[in-house]
Length: 212
Image (tube, rainbow, N blue to C red; front, side, top):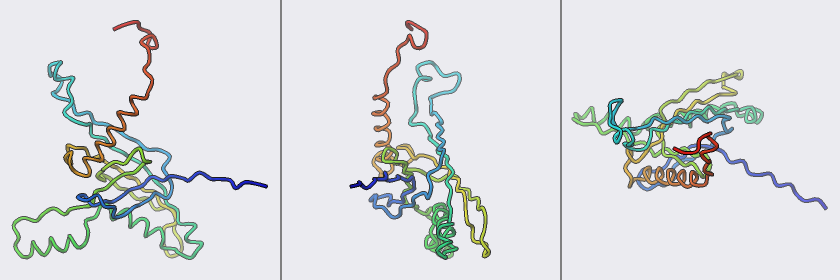
């Protein structure tokens, strides 16, 4: 008697939109295919410049500015076979809407401006989280978005597309330590410290020296 083969569940990366106050999940956007490459860069925030004293040069003003870049692919071939030629339009619109303010907010601000309001309050966007496994749930701001559409059907619906995303991780310096974003960043940082503590320490002899 044979046993059913268990296929491991594929975990996808994606973006979660949450209420910045309560943390309630508003929308979940999963990437259709996980990108092969994810690039992270860190801008270190030190104290002083080249002329700083040694004691100042060794200090940090806060967490580094961490930036993330990735490229994800979308493919509507399967949905087109089912007769849904506009499916990729919907997926693209879902991602592109992340960088647009809501139309209701735009109309409300336009109405206030027309009524002679001196100060127009900047529009509040949902808290954006980049999720890359349970080990990385990061509050981010989208800094760059590019869309490359490839191949089209007879009605000019795109069949394939590539999404380029640039993200900046929000730290406690951006959002405050008591906020939802700040709490998520601190949890991310604490997990990073725990992982670093598990890494084995190399001996000085590995570096070809016996002491400092």
